[in-house]
Image 1 (cartoon, rainbow, N blue to C red):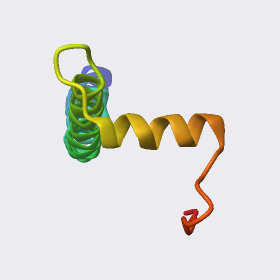
Image 2: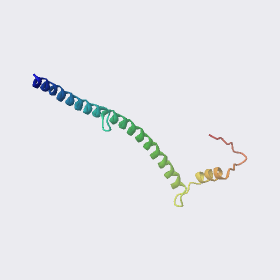
Image 3: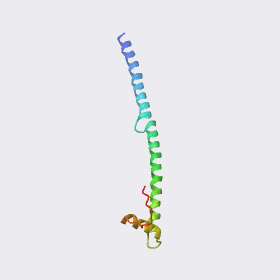
Image 4: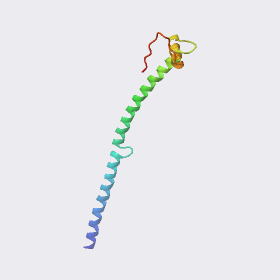
Length: 100
């Protein structure tokens, strides 16, 4: 009879251990470092960073254009006049200044 009790104890321990391992792996698959929820977070962050990159690319393109327009090879006199007035803080008497 003692052997029967000992054997029934082992039959409960093994499934409990296996169930614990299975529960751990399911938890890790859902909420772990490489889990489903982390993947969703990373996808959302990626979309945000891609939008920010697009804005920065557009801003860099504007700056490239302004730099080209102020270069020695291609000089935009209107832009040069605008920048000089802005930096020096001067305006003609007949101009209306609108600040934004």
